[in-house]
Length: 201
Image (cartoon, rainbow, N blue to C red; front, side, top):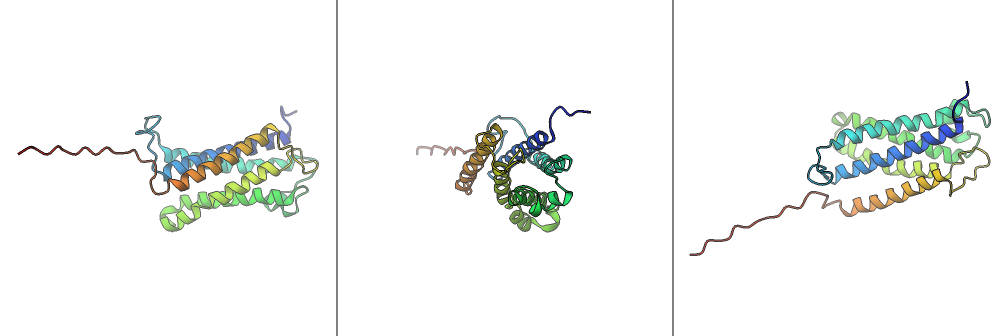
């Protein structure tokens, strides 16, 4: 049976999907941290941002796990399961692959800490949740610098997939700066205070 796409193409698509889901998850998380209300602001509908944040996290983890696993079926270069779990000795670009693996492990740690938030306490959970930022950096570094063809380790940075990842990197940096600047004010809707006119004597 012949697959409609190659294993390397499938690996690339899974990786791009993982980055897209991760970026979406981070954007939703930032909106939640800024107290954004989709009911009081755009799109003025009741949307459960917490549920969206949770499901995009699950999708991110699933795609990030599936992305390297399919490499086991690549004939050349040959990847062992050990090379996927701890790619320090992987056949090509070991340090770039290690960045991707580290991003996956950090994302799993953040997800597990979120599931155990009531047990470990909010302060610890909050500190662990900030690990999404170094995880995102390593995920994007891995995505941009890795060679999708597994040939010489020199990716084409103007390839469509790379341009998508580069755009995602710019978006994450820009939204992180905005998030930092709004850290105290947030995105709560402004309230107009109407003072009663004093009665004349």
